Image (tube, rainbow over all chains, first blue to last red; front, top):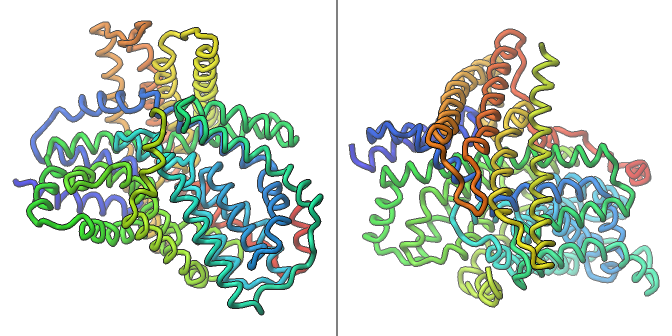
Amino acid sequence: MNEMMIGFILLCILFALLASGFWVAFTLIAVSIAGMVLIGNDNFGLLFGTSTWASVSDWSLAALPLFIWMGEILFRSNLSKDLFKGLTPWLSRVPGKLLHVNILSCGIFAAVSGSSAATAATIGKMTLPELKRQGYDDKMAIATLAGSGTLGLLIPPSIILIVYGVAAEVSIGRLFMAGALPGIMLVILFMGYTAFWSYRHANKTPQTEKIYTWPEKFSSLLRLIPIGTLIFFIIGSIYAGLTTPTEAAAFGVVGSLILAATSRSLSISTFIDSLMGAVKTSCMIIFILVGAAFLTMAMGFIGIPRMLAENIALLELSPYMLLFILTIMFIILGCFLDGISVVVLTTSIVLPMVMEAGIDPLWFGIYIVLVVEMSQITPPVGFNLFVIQSLTGRNILFVAKAALPFFFLLLAAVLIVTIFPQIVTWLPHTMSRG
Amino acid sequence: MRTVLDKLYFFSGALSGLCIVAICAVILARVVGRWFSIEIPSSDDFAGFLLAAASFLGLAYTFRSGDHIRVNLFISRLPASLNRWIERFILIIGSILIIYLTWQIALLALESHEYNDLSSGYIPVPLWIVQLPLAIGMVTFSIAILDQIFCHLFFGQMLPKSEEEALADSQQIDITTPDSLNTERQ
């Protein structure tokens, strides 16, 4: 049986298992075992043991549970309220006003909490009623919430970038730095679009209720200083080479505990809840990584990535053409799978082909996260959409249609980083070490 | 029996949580030690071992909370009885797979014990000791999935929903009344 045939059979097994609701991590392992059986390699049990031990005892992966725990602690603190109250006075003069508060607080909250669905729920519960009360347009309120909940995937510390870094063997510190500028660019794109929209539809945005004085603005700034310091410290210490991402994560946990304690939102029960929440999320992700490591190994034995790389080389596609095809494929895949599963399937199967085409794996990590962000706000799977649907009681198509402009903004961001890859690669190249 | 099992999953999950706390402590000690030019020997190895233990000890707890990701987009649209049969089917395949993997992980630790394998860091540690938590985690995971099959077959208990799915089913917030913000903040 040739590789093409085996690849086809495995693809069928993969989709059959996923569609019947089989756990993603189990599916990756089952497909790997099926592949090894098809090529007649009966050593898979032993190989599973060694590949698993190698992938889970790697200390750079320790950044994952720590950043997740940090997010769980902050998620249970008063952070969302502080962001809302701290940002509102500063944005009251920008066209679109409170809509920008939605974007920025979602962006910051998602960056530190690591879950875009939880972000949409937490921030949405606070901002949606206020936006409604002041008479903002429904569609725009929903769109900014859905769109900016995805920002956390790119802005460091990002869980999905750790997953990509571990699976693709790219430095996590460099990936974080690579994500920073595109993240800021996305925020500018989102805010720019919102300001432009509000300018054009002045009748749909209410007049400022309240003019804030400078003392008021500065006192509100106090609410933003702790979280700002925490993020600045994490990103800055990684950039300056003072700490590795794992060490920065440990400080992040301590910082967020102090932050929660000083805002009197830390109790024994929230501490335990945050820790058990971290256990659940990190076990889930690490087990997927175990499956991915085994799949990568099995694929290597079968030779599918090599075959794909050779065939792509024969086609003599330009890197742009290849990226175009991959983008379409990822958008379709992202409609049915969550982001982490898309990332690990990619690194196991198509990464050799992408590197063969001369694409930088560091850049590719940022590219794939942008595409995953798009899939978060496209139906039918997109937890952001589901969460907002249940919050607002609007039908999912209404929510998806409202979020459509942000889908195109993300697409524009993919285009911009493809034409100007320096936006991604410049910052990591200026790092002192990593 | 029910409470014993639930305690087992929670206890194993709590151990996993303690490992995460320990990882944090080891890494902090490493950095603080560096400030005073004290090298904490093999700290990265120990962080790795703790991570391995944390990842596997929490598997059963995560499974029982429904947090292992699966795509239930298609099967949740099917009629309830068909959905039930598909869940039974994937549970049975899943349990065969997990029991097999448990056996392989146990074998890994057994072989490390047999050949007296040591870790390669500054402080050599017998590998079987640090691989044992993985085997224990997998055994608990196997028990959890068998438990789930039993409950599914005899009590019709469906697979639990994850936190994100629960979030998507959460209550609609009331945004129609002007004073809803005040009630929201209480």
